[in-house]
Length: 200
Ligand SMILES: Nc1ncnc2c1ncn2[C@@H]1O[C@H](COP(=O)(O)OP(=O)(O)OP(=O)(O)O)[C@@H](O)[C@H]1O
Image 1 (spheres, rainbow, N blue to C red):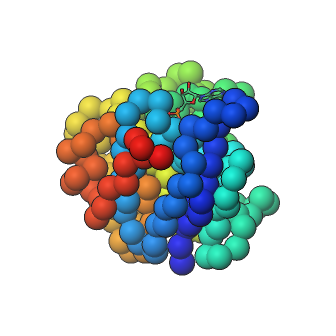
Image 2 (image 1 turned 45 degrees about the vertical axis):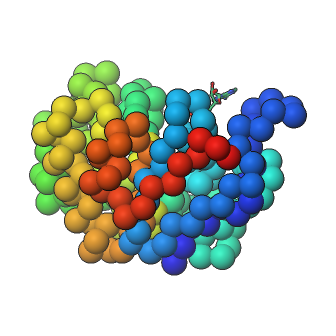
C-alpha cells in the first residue's frame, strides 16, 4: 500500500512552476513530514495528493492506480481551517456522518461533546470544529491522511490529545500520514522522515 507522487509539477500561472520533478512516496503506516518555507507549495502538494488538484506534470497513484474519483476517498485531507471544510448549512451531526459513522468511543477519545451534534458550525469554537473534521476523516477506508497544519490553531493539550488518537489509529490500521507543519519540533516528534520542498 503506498501513496506516490511521481515527477509531479504544478504552478497556478502559466510558465511559473511552484515545484517540478517532485517525487514523494508514503508507505503503509508511514508518518512523513513535509516542511518548507511559506509559499513553497506544501498545501498545494497536499491537495494534489488528496486528489483535490491535478498536477500539471507527473502523476499521483495509490497502490499503483490513479486516485479514485467516486465514493469515500481513501486519501483524506484535514487542513488548518475547519470552518472552511464544513457545510455551514449542515448541523454537525450530518457533517460528522458525511462519509462514515464514527462510534462513541472515537468521539469520546477526540473530546467531542455530543451536545455539539445538534449545533450549526458557527456555534462551535475552532477547536471543537476541528475535532469533528478529524473524526470525519478517520473512516475505516482511510488509507492515508494528509494533515495540513491540522493542529496549528489548537492549544498544546488539545494538540497532543488529537495526535495521540490519530497516531494510535494509524498504528492499528497501518494508515500512512503526511504531516504538513511549520513546527519543526512537531515534525521531529511525529515523523520517521521529513521531506523539504524548498528547493523543488
Ligand atoms: N488558487 C490559487 N491561485 C493562485 N495562486 C495560489 C492559489 N492557491 C495558492 N496560491 C499561491 O501558491 C503558492 C503556494 O501556496 P501554498 O499554500 O501551497 O504554500 P504553503 O507552502 O502551504 O504555504 P504556507 O506555509 O504559508 O501555508 C503561494 O504563493 C500562494 O499564494
